Image 1 (tube, rainbow, N blue to C red):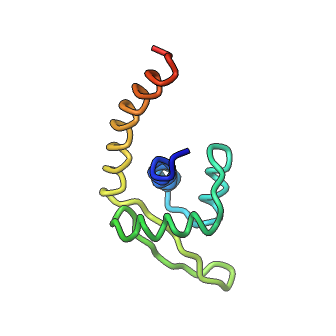
Image 2 (cartoon, rainbow, N blue to C red; image 1 turned 45 degrees about the vertical axis):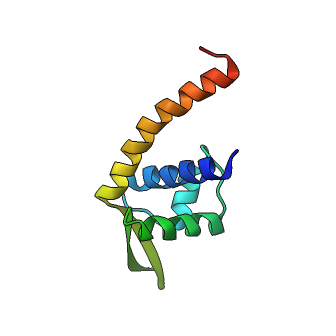
Image 3 (spheres, one colour; image 1 turned 180 degrees about the vertical axis):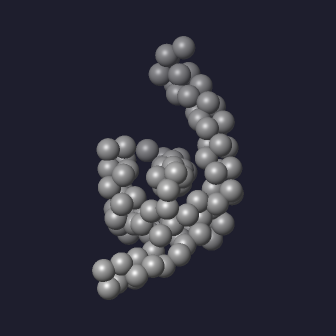
Length: 102
């Protein structure tokens, strides 16, 4: 899969994983495991990029004596999901053209 396309899809998958409730790294990986495989290092790179893009915010909470980071989607992140849904329609048309499935 093209690197840029995969990057965009992974970003939206992570946003969807936290859309309905705040979550943390391990749970995000677990929640996405049936859909797409993602390594811990890749996830944290994505989370940092999404935070820098103001698509999520991070809060730290103590959990069993350790600090756990929870991720919360912002309105910008929700807008990104909606944009992706519109873009996906275009991607499906291109796919249908390439594969001959009309």
